[in-house]
Amino acid sequence: MNQEEYILAHSDQEPDYLAKINRATHLRMLNPRMLSGHLQGRVLAMFCQMIQPERILELGTYTGYSALCMAEILPEDGVLHTIECDDELESFILQNFASVLHGKKIKLHIGQALKVIENLDEVFDLVFIDADKREYLAYYEAVLPKVRPGGFILADNTWWDGKVLEQVNPNDKQTIEIMRFNDFIAADSRVEKVMLPLRDGLTVIRKK
Ligand SMILES: C[S@@+](CC[C@H](N)C(=O)[O-])C[C@H]1O[C@@H](n2cnc3c(N)ncnc32)[C@H](O)[C@@H]1O
Image (tube, rainbow, N blue to C red; front, side, top):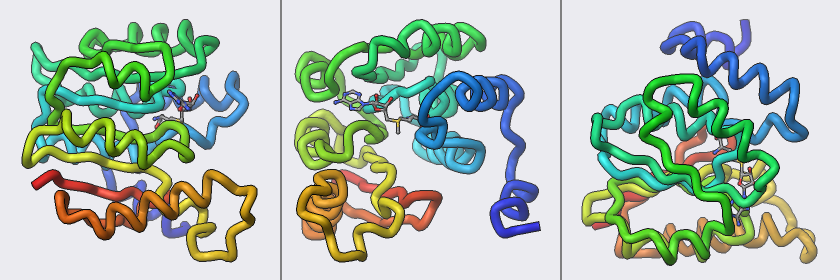
C-alpha cells in the first residue's frame, strides 16, 4: 500500500455518485487529471463543513466534480455559482448535476470567468479558484471584493507539479503566472494564507 492508498483507506469513502462521475470523466474526457478526485473532493467537502458557506463561487467547473463536493454541504437555500468556458462540456455537467438532489443548488454559467464574475451580484463565503492558471491573479483581484470579511478563497494547483521551484521557461505563461500569484498572495496583508501540500498544492486564503 502506498501513501495515497493509505490516506484514502483512512478517509471517508468517495460517495457512489461521485465515483460514477469520476469514472465517466476518465472514460469520456480528454484531460481527466483536471478533476479534483477522491481525496481533494473530501477535503473540499470537509472545508465546507467547517466554514458552513451559504454562497459559494467556483471558477472552472470541468465535469462538475468539485462543485458537487462543495454543494453537498450547502443549506436548502444556499447556492453555488460555477463558471466554465468550454460550452462542449455543458450537457455532461448538467447531467452530472441532475444525478443527485443537491445538484439543484448549483448554478452553471457558461462563459469566461472574468466576464461572468463582473455580473455576479453576490457576497461569497467561499471561492474556489480552479480555471485558467494564467489568470489566477486577475481572478483573485476580481473576487476579493465579493468575499465577505472572514470568508475564504481556495486556490488549486499552486504547487504546479513543482515547476514553481524550477528554472522557468519564458514561454511557459502558466508557471510564470502561478508563481506571480503565489508571491503576490504571500505578501498581501489583506489576507491570511497557508499553502497546503495537498495533491498539486492548495492555497487557503482568509480575507481579514
Ligand atoms: C482544472 S479544471 C476544473 C476542475 C474542477 N474544478 C474539478 O475539480 O473537478 C479547469 C476548468 O477551467 C476551465 N477554464 C479555463 N479557463 C477558463 C476561463 N477563463 N473561464 C472559465 N473556465 C475556464 C477549463 O475549461 C476546465 O474545464
